[in-house]
Every structure is written in C-alpha cells, then in structure tokens.
Image (cartoon, rainbow, N blue to C red; front, side, top):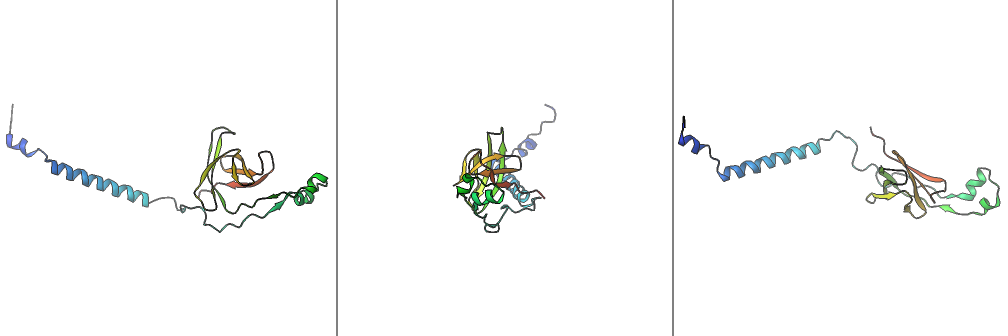
Length: 157
C-alpha cells in the first residue's frame, strides 16, 4: 500500500462512548426542532373551536304550531304535539365522505370528545344524521323528516 500510516488510521477509529454521545445529542436536537416547529404554528385558531356555553341552546319547536303558522290547517298536523329536542351545544368537527350513504360526520356534543356518526345514526335522542356534505351535516327527527339542525364546519381564516 502506498502511504500506509498506521497511527493515522488508529486515530480515526470512533469509540463506542463517542458514538453514543453523538447519537444522544442528535436525538435531543431533533426533538428540540420538532417541539419548536409544533409551537411555532401558522394557524392562529385555538384548538377548541368554541367555548362551552357560548352558544345559546336551540329552542323547543312544536311541529303543530309551526305547521299552523305556515298555513297548514289539516287535522293531522294540528293534532301533533311532537316537540323537537333542543341540542344544547353541538359542533361539527369534521366530515368524511366516500359515497352519500357511506358518509361520516365527527360531532362534539356538550363539550364531550368528538365522535364519528354515520349517515342514519342517532346523534342524540330525537336527532338522526340525515346527510353530510363537504361543509355541513344535517340533522332531523328521522331520515325522511325535514332538517331541524344544520351544523357547519368552522370557516378557515
């Protein structure tokens, strides 16, 4: 071999302690960069879209009174006294749509953790998820009844 320098090749060997120290410091640096990027977010919105209690509760609606007000005078509609349950605090967190019947809405009810609901599922007593669009979810008493509540995704700034 040309230029064989044994002392130089011995000095280039890395000890296990040096290697371990380098790996630990690299991991610490990567962790600091990851935490720094997580803290330096470009999104000014808070993690929670609404504060519990800031939205007023929806009023009870009587179907017979609403039908009478809209001009329906049939005996069937006047005899109904079904009232729509008041949803206290519902927030649409997200949607997932593959097909119209295979759509999900992620809804938070009364500041509880959000849960996914498939179209046709009961969201709350007396409320069924009727339909999901890319920006909203519609709820009603049954799948074929009129929509009572429309939840919308929060607008991006």
